[in-house]
Structure formats: C-alpha cells, structure tokens
Image 1 (spheres, rainbow, N blue to C red):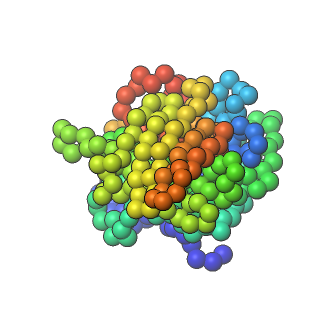
Image 2 (image 1 turned 90 degrees about the vertical axis):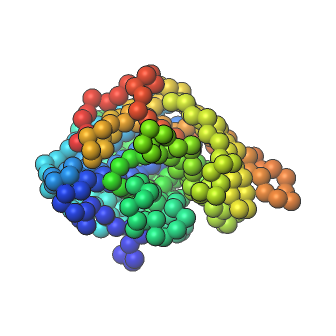
Length: 327
C-alpha cells in the first residue's frame, strides 16, 4: 500500500471536544460536463460519539440539476480504517473508494504521481488549535477508474481527472471558498487548488485569506498565505467568483462560474450546533491568468474542469438545499 498520504484525526479528539472531518473525491468526464462529488464525513458534538455520513452528488449539465443523496449512521459506526470506513456502507482507502447512499453506489480506484498539497504554509499549523480548520489535498491531480451507479444509470470511469481532499477541525470558517481546476486547454498536467477563508473574531469577520498552489509545467507554485493577505482579492457570488491570489513566483487572476441550476446545496453543521449553507458545482468553467516576472501573462481555461464551493451563513442564495440534516 505504501505510505499513507494523510490520516483520520477524529480518533484523537478528546471526549469533551467537538470535531468535524471530511474526506472527499471530485472527478469528472474528460470531454463532457458530467461529474461526481463524494464525501465521507464525521461530526462529533462535545461529549458525544462521532457520527459518520456518506454524501453523493452527480452533476450533469444535460439534466435539470444535480442528483444528490446522503445517509447518516449511528453514533460510533465510523472507524479510521486507512483512511476512513463509515459503517459497512463506504470506505475511503489509499487508492480505493467505495460506498452507497440512497440510489447511488460507487466503486473507484485512483492514483496520482503528484505528492500531497498541504495548504497551510507551516507544519505546526496542522497541530496547533489555530487555525481551527485544516485543509490538505492527498491526491491533488488524480485519475479515477471504476463505476458509479445512480438508480438505473451505470457510468464507467476510465482515468477521469479529479482530486481528493481532506479537511477537519473544531469549527468551519465563518465563510469559505474551495476551488480546483484541471484539464486546462493546451496545458497538460496543469492544475490549481485553492482554499479561501474568513474567520470570526468576536464581532469582526476577517478579510479573505487564501492558500494553495498552481502546478505548471511540472513546477508547483505556492500561492497565498498570511503575507499575501493584503493583496488577495475575492469577489464571490453563489454561482462563482473573481479572484486574485499572489505568490512568491506567480500571481493568479481568475474567474470560476457555472449556471445556478448546476449547483447542489447542502446543510453543514458545526460541532457547536451552528449551521452553514454550502453550495458546490464540480463541473464549472474556469479561466485564469498567470503573471510571472519576466514572462508574458499566460491565460488558461477549462470549460467544465473546475469545482467551486462556497460556504456561507446566508440562506438567500437561490440554490435549493438538499433535504438532509447534518448529521
């Protein structure tokens, strides 16, 4: 199996503390606006046992909207089985993922030559209580094979591009954005993986800060971090955003968007009982401009190879929320 690229954190959480954790997969058809977003999650209230859930969304631009399912299991029916097993219904291992939720089931294998992407710039940040949200991408540019079944529809995957992610913490950010882009036209192997957040400090919500990387021509260019916060710009909407994120060797300007009908809406709970509305489209369009000193700007685009997720407090975004509680 080799060395694991990450590990479940919930087993080490003290009984009196709260915790959330998510392992996820995002993959899409190389030439069609068709994709899947799959999550294996844990939510632990203070003083309670952790509860596991399986989430599934099929995105198909030819349909009226996404097809989504979620199932939650009894307290304690989740184990850290390299990386996580939820009841007997789903497991996410190193290079394999399987599961079932509602009328959906999946059996996938995946691989990536890319090393993990750790969004936080310092290793100690993954061990410290601050920031309260941790994010990394174990397989930032993966290829998926296998099958997905949704009701009577069987979809075969043959090296579909995508990514895997892992995030956890004591509390979600007050507001967050996650985006991933790959399969840019004319730029084989390029990918972009970014996380942005705003944090609540008493009555004040901080400006956007972002972290992540752009991989270009085999070189990984770190982006964002605390030192770049003043030059980071984010203009978000429920159906997309425009952004600028600088790094030491490059600055990326971008736009990511999709029709509202192609977004799925979910309820996310924090361990303290508060809630966010989260909207996601995993077959979004993305255009970016890469600026590097001494070079002409490089413009890249992908028609449906991007994912965009926005987590927020407001409920007036116009995207239907799926009828599943959390947990």
